[in-house]
Length: 254
Image (cartoon, rainbow, N blue to C red; front, side):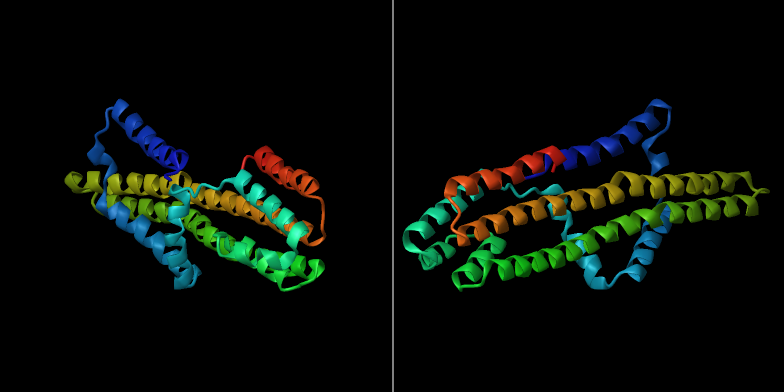
């Protein structure tokens, strides 16, 4: 479903600037400068492409759906499923979970259970899946870094646009009719650079980081549940253990 908070935040940030400009007597046309847009957005994209492989840029663009489209996760259902698996194992053994694997959509849970069913020892299972989490975190954070880096470039490129606009002004001091366009490019380029960084790029990076932390918490909970099943821990205690992760998630605001 659509993440209303992200969409509302983006619209609110842009609308607040547009409204303030209108209140001060400015027109909407004054905030739209093609030259400034080419300098800031083109320059920022070029600098970002130089900083990262094209593969990372494409993945970053694809990750935008994670920012504005939230995948609903039913934590209670996942815990209930794990508890149900523990009852099945206590009654019929680990191999009885073979039939359950076909019903599982979560790839991390499915892989963890698959390794447990295949007889991997709990210690090795934890090490294997924790290493997968490390790789997952590194890959996802690299994508978030693309937006963070672009957010760092944008204000500087905006200043370059401002300087270019002022150069145009200085070159046309004798022709007052050309002064307005140069000044407009200078100021609008600065707005584009600082605005795109602080209203769009950096918040997207932060949003992705928060999602990564949320996903890792869920993965840790799943891994703890699977290993608890392997160790034959009482389902009631497993339930109590897993609910600690949800409490921590709520405390951190993830």
